[in-house]
Image (cartoon, rainbow, N blue to C red; front, side, top):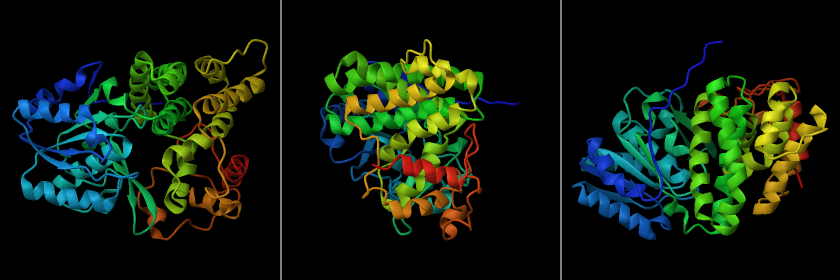
Length: 402
């Protein structure tokens, strides 16, 4: 099997690394940067420090602080037009996943001069995005090193994915100072999201020794540090969690994401479920589902999840991996089941059918009016190691209901 591993983003990590943002912007040829953030992050001292560093480097700044829970097509299109109008030549994102996806979308539409909706799908634009610097403020999405952006199409109630090699961020700054002000309820969801990236990359059918090495190390580091990072705000643990979440996205950027993301997508688009909740709740069940066909990966993943597998059969070890994930959720205050409000039982079959196009379908069936006629044996598009049918997805949804 031919494999590739591509990661062009420069990663600058460690305490104090945020101070390099001005120099990095100048090296990338920026003279005027759009700084993208949200109302909470833009009020933090480290945000002011970043603006000061940009000013000291001679970079003029325009600001957009209006990001919300999701990156939205309307915001992206408005800011893309603004960027072209005001002569902005670079984007600096300071925030969580929605902020970075918003900024990435702006960088794409600004150079390609078309709406974000027309840029969704795989490689559906031809001109390289504006230079980008990403400063994540959660140990979560890993969007700082990802070519992909996930956006909400408000008019059609859809979550869409767009990207390609022309939209990799140029630099990522991982400074643990950005995590210091995170309250627990804000820190938990992105941390769980990051864990899904590492696990799903490891369980991918297109994984390679390169992606396995990064994914497994990311899972091990995340699992080891997540409790202390969230519950006690331990500085060392925060730094490890931030680096681990970045590593996890390096892995899944090359090995792709699996069933947790494919099944979560319709829940996010049609039920307005937050992304980390969707993928996180699904992760234990889809992990067990895929491990059943990956016998050589069972014990390495168990070790990364700190499972004592001595004397356990393979099936018991797989069950213990799922249990370890759920115990972690309990320890950090993340619900491991969907409530009836989040996923009504009467819509389970519909959601399983809507998952058929998979995460990487772009416009395809999702925009054309919903899933094609799907039966129990219809396969859900996914690069995961094990093929999943609609009927199997329906059972997993049922298992994840409270």
